[in-house]
Length: 287
Image (cartoon, rainbow, N blue to C red):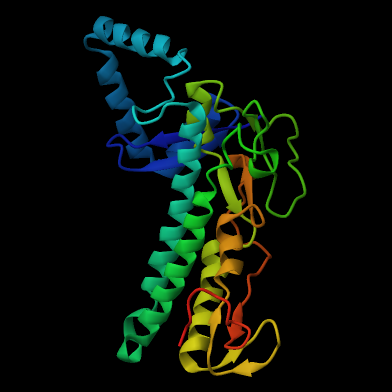
């Protein structure tokens, strides 16, 4: 069974994910991804590290290995429980999706070059709406919390997570093998960082482009209402629909690194715009 590893270069400036069944495969893939010279440099640095003051360094290693058995070693000073720590981890991922969306939208032509800054205003309004929804759901902090309600968490009551399989599959082909419990040990918590919350409808390839299409419709006054199917010059974006696709289990599945398919997914988002009449109950009016 392949396991996921994180490998860094000698300067610790570049980090890559590698799935391998054994050390030989790990070395070969690391060489290929980092480059032969970089891998040799890393090996030389390791050799130099182990050739001096080995006795003292071994004592330090023993200290940390012993500490690794302590159930609280996974916690930072600001965290009192494992559940709090894991909730923080998922919130970090959600913030990452938000800022990825924000960066892409604010780098678009319509944001930078629109007349009178109208495109900028429309995108900023959408981002405010999206952020407010995310805040109201507390960044889905329950997803990794084993003590949360059963329907609100991805793991079981012990903290065991199971891979959801490829984005297009109903379940993991490695059933019983792609499982992990980051609550159990520090080592599993580190490996858990290589597991991905995979967007079935991809964020960069589909969701963000469709958001920009929706913004462009508002900007040009060419809106097709998704509810009444009528055309309109004024209206808004149903941010809730994009929230579901970016941040929730409606479009996310937790997957082992082996099951994280990075090619193009054959699934599309949509242009979720509403006319002014249908949009009346929303929190922000786009005009």
